[in-house]
Length: 277
Image (cartoon, helix red, strand yellow):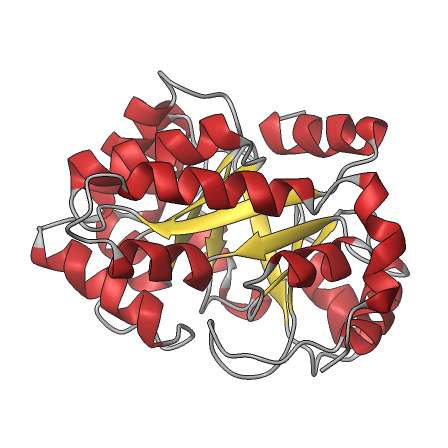
């Protein structure tokens, strides 16, 4: 088992759900990004999604698009993201997922990426724009299966298609809460719960839900039906709003603690009282 499997087993034993946090690597610059992420891990983050900045992040909303632009302006590439991962491994043992579009991995070399990612201490990869039918181009050049391949499921995905997408997945399944891009508002917990029920019929993997989750109430509501909650735009919004604030890392760490509290078992009972939008 890798760190992802161990983390979800331990969370289940404690009656907790995973808090999965996304940040764009190198935003606003590499030293401050390392400071931010380290603070998040120490504050209670369960899984880190480290975003590889990309020039055309089509699945991402404006907040994450701007975060990629800031990182790219500092010269952050996949090579620098792997270097950051290596440095983070000196500070934390929480699972690290490299969150990327396919182009940076293809340009780097898919076989080389596999070996270098593992050597840096990464536990998995999520490639936003690489469907199962095209994945052999990447995984066929991997020298093993130690790097978990996280798969995305859309809210419009049929159960038959879910079965196809999840058959070669590992680590966990990322369920997109709604159509649209990251950072958009509007969560329908009941329909998300039904999608999770469908997923559980075709995979044993934990299911984490992301897109549009920003408040503590959102986290508690989603944690009542899923195995984990993914937050990205809300963290990047804090970074964007505090670019000149020396306490940025402390502010984000405080928000991590609030979100993490909402994943605990005693929060689940009150989730039913939250307004469904």
